[in-house]
Image (cartoon, rainbow, N blue to C red; front, side, top):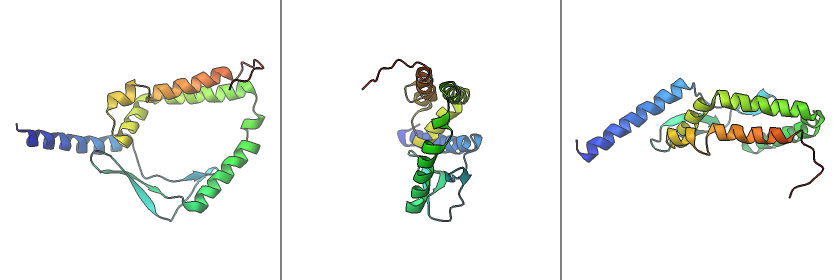
Length: 155
């Protein structure tokens, strides 16, 4: 097999795997979630494409200035008056630990989603510091500090 044929074969395999992974992971078009509800955006959309094939993985709505302002206002309101500021340390720790559990349970699929999104090799997505396991470890680390009040401030 000559080099050109080899690369064409590789290209077909990548194209097939992108479509197969997208379908297996049930990746659909995106929607914006703001202030507790899914928005029915009628504005422009942008395509998220696989970087090595330029195949459209999903289409996402553009929020625009008004949508971003609405999301920022909702986030501010949630931060100031939502459940988190009134939540005790044990409840916060339990919530963060539930995030650790969810990420850990779905770590392999999250790795495949990351590969689908940005084209990095699957072994890199699953076995390095950019893996979902590392994200779970970070949440676990901070969950562990929630109930360890020492009276010290770290810079």
